[in-house]
Image: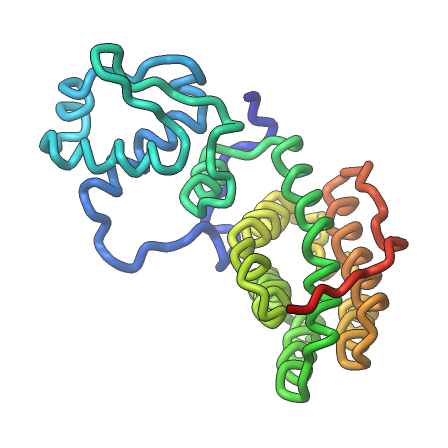
Length: 265
């Protein structure tokens, strides 16, 4: 897959790909190295990975460490080992694209516009509903915190790093406050879409929150505070569209006119 954007430099925002605070285990180092090679296209779909002896020498690890790394990649749907054949690389449609490691590897390899469009389409499918659900479950404390995040993004003199990290916290807070474990679990996907947007913005471009201005985030908070699920969904759609068009994109489907259905146990 051609990469239209180079790998995103981690120094450009304070909210880059997940930072591992603990020393990286040997099998995780091997998994990451092979995973990046698969995502970047060095090992294309249908090809065989080098023999285990070759990989063990390449990464300077034991056979047991390599085996553990390959087992993890297999569990992510990226490879399929077969006796007397070798370890075959599977196509992207087999990968667990909700997996945070796979998302990080895409980010590190450099995402193309099609990949980013897929992420924004997913945002459009889930985040308006998340905002609507939060509107039906909100309380004074959650609204206060969301308001503080929205206000922080528009304070004069804020650096782009602070704006980006606050914007990310704003969106993840809404997902967390749905109380829905499935929506909460897509936080890694939303996070990757936002981080890519922030890091791809050139100095003369605006971040998503800067492009929106104070009104739209405030309008979203107001809709949630009022318990207006449809308005919250509509306002979130505006936020997502602004982020995409700020990157020069087009073509997202407007879902804001769809009637929301609330399912209760």
